[in-house]
Amino acid sequence: MSNQAPGVRIDGLTVVYKTPAGELPAVRGVTLTLEPGSITGIVGESGSGKSTLALSLLNAVQPPGRIAGGSVEIDGLGDVVGLRGEELRKARGKHIGYVFQAAQNSLNPLKTVGKQLLDLGRSHGVDDLRGLVREAKELLGRMGLDGARVLDSHQHELSGGMRQRVGIMLALVLNAHLVVLDEPTTALDMITQANILRIVREVHAERGLTTLVITHDIGVVAEVADRLAVMYGGRLVEQGPTREVLGAPRHPYTRGLIQAIPRLTGDIGEARALPGRPPTLATVPKEGCVFRERCPLRMDVCDTVDPETVADGPRLVACHAVAGAPTTAPPSGDLATKEHA
Ligand SMILES: Nc1ncnc2c1ncn2[C@@H]1O[C@H](COP(=O)(O)OP(=O)(O)OP(=O)(O)O)[C@@H](O)[C@H]1O
Ligand code: SF4
Ligand SMILES: [Mg+2]
Image (cartoon, rainbow, N blue to C red):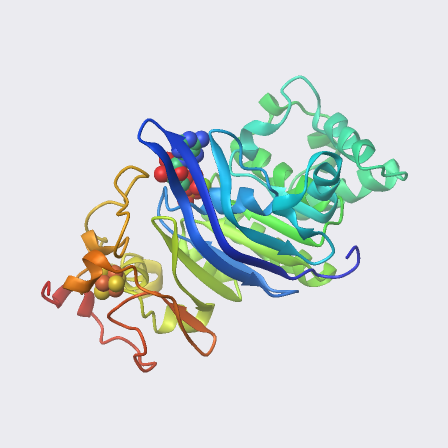
């Protein structure tokens, strides 16, 4: 797969964490396809399971967590859930470039960025280390940094935003064709964020990558993603082409997320915060719809029956209220005005 964008098929993925109340799912029955050459965005509030899903793509979920079910088929690698040891180590970095959410803290404080870059290259058998350094400087330069200076720096000499860009450089520098970016722009101001997203798009197109961008900020995915998947309580509740999902959201949660963003509704006066709070592992309902506590369309069936994911063309929605409904834009404001059933 080294010169081609790989497709990724996540099927029925369930990931659990051991808690005092037993093993509880942070990701439950997630099925998602990343088309070769596409940028997919995953969005959802804190705790919805986004990072856990991202870690699963590298089979990097750590105890007390484990992948309890399902598969992650990556073209050229097979089902990564079955990979172990050396095979897995090689896949990470070289086939799958990634920036974990904690990337800002994952640099070694005792070594310069340049030294860590060389370690990375050596551990993946890169012969042309000069070429690697050149490539790193180029990427850092594109992101508005002085590459030579950054490579000479230790972590503590870099700001949060600089470290975030170093993380992105390290994800791209080995020329992996599947790239996973978990909250790549959270430490950045708006202008730098826009700049970084532009570079992610450019590099994605130049190299022909398959890219997954994870964020709690729906504005970020709106800018980069071809396809958008919305997570809530460990479930994928809606997915489809980004424009369609943002233009005519069907799941009540997606509607609520969009209406809470003034940037997307275009009018600050119109933005409405989503009421309530997202569930934790302990409070997420074990049966019925995970979103029901906050849902304005809740019905009796929602308390007992988990809504099936129903496909309508490229759109997939898991909600009793919209299953099989025709594709129409929701009347504006219906989320706030509908009575509880
Ligand atoms: N090591 C762990 N042990 C126990 N529970 C965990 C662990 N890591 C994550 N969780 C729980 O799993 C759920 C999903 O967490 P995850 O980090 O995947 O969410 P997220 O969507 O990435 O959130 P955020 O937007 O805050 O990054 C949360 O309820 C979280 O508390
Ligand atoms: S209508 Fe029911 S199934 Fe749909 S989001 Fe609301 S609670 Fe969930
Ligand atoms: Mg996260």
